[in-house]
Image (tube, rainbow, N blue to C red; front, side):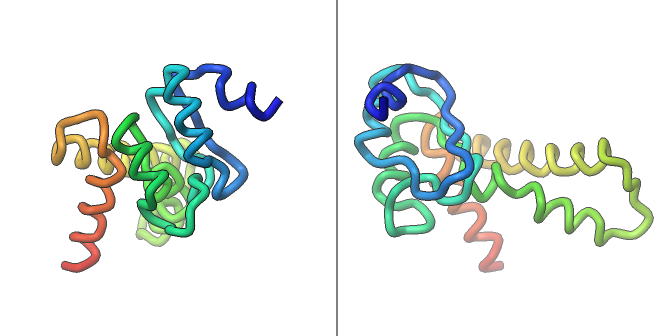
Length: 134
């Protein structure tokens, strides 16, 4: 059944609830079966020692669109930041909108920087590191 799961075929894969789940073999099987996008639902989805951009992540980023886990999982951090502002709307819709805008803006910035559907993770990581070093 494990072999069948990774080769079943899907355009979008969302690894959730487990870190270090995806091996290079799994990735290659999914790519061979029409994978186009990986959007992490758990931190550090690839089974490698590196936390950011190890060899499996790099291979995935070169072959398909990989939405970085530090962007796709930023919801709680953005929600905390949102609630720290003064005079804000505390309704769930407003919080979700703020989180959605943050993710959208990060992905748009990455796309505008590279203008391609691959290497999104690499570009987003470079942008984030530049911002941290300012």
